[in-house]
Amino acid sequence: MDTTTYRAYTNIALIKYWGKRNKELFLPVTSSLSLTLNEFYTETTLEWNTQSNEDTFTLDGQILDINAIEKVSRFINMFRDLSGIHRPVHVKSTNHVPTAAGLASSASAFAALASACNDLFGTNLSNKELSTYARRGSGSATRSLFGGFTVWHKGIGDESDSSYAEMIDEADWDIGMLVVMINKEQKKISSRVGMEHTIKTSPFYKLWPETVAEDLEAIIPAIENRDFPTIGQIAEHNAMKMHATIIAADPSMTYWEPESLTAMNIVRDLREAGIPCYFTMDAGPNVKVLCRLSQAEEIKKAFEKHFSSDRLVISGPGKGPHKIS
Ligand code: PMV
Image (cartoon, rainbow, N blue to C red):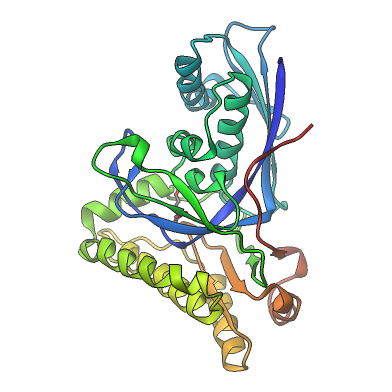
């Protein structure tokens, strides 16, 4: 085989990953849990490089320079070492996120790249094994090796193999998200820097591992029972607790913008009006509203009073990576 193309979807954490216990191996302090989304994905084509002795990389039609490609090359080295095939490759990636999304694409990007590497280098890893490789590109990519509701197990000690993802529910029921795009700018503080700073300086961080363990223990049966309000309440509270640890760092950090607060208030108003929906936010200002997919249009209408419709995207649950023929 000379070329392969894979598509992988992004995921949004309902129980957040915030902090590494081993930076080299991307081993997290806690386990986490997400919902994969079908509207946001990356497609990556990987082929043997016959034009150059180095790896080359085109992202969204732009040829990337040597510095930008270094991380990607190091990632691909894991598959070269595993297969014993030390050939350079050409990577062509396209992110399919609506313009102005400002959503992190590293999860879908590294899940697509790991899947394509597995195919081209013939390493035959299962998606569970592959998730431990994707993890080393970006922590959240671990969970994009599966669809639906997926848990990323934190694992044991410094054992890389024990920190993998596992799907716990296909999410083939009435659930989805409305993504409210507040800002397309690159985030000012990367999640890597934000996590390190929070761990080092936030007095609240010591409470984080315990509260995540409790939230996971409560949300897993709620997902099994398709108990949407309980899932939403736990997810919203977990996101706010993560942001509380971040806000309490020294110097303090905030990922929110004024419009993020507007979006949170719309969600609260909708709930008061009897429409169950819950917000979550990551290391950026965008707000993701967890809702019943059947009510997403109605919720979007309420948001259209404050946000233009091109900043609002409804998504149902996505699946795991797949090969594009
Ligand atoms: O792995 P990264 O760098 O994409 O960090 C993800 C951090 C959060 O999005 C805030 C939480 C999460 O679990 O996805």
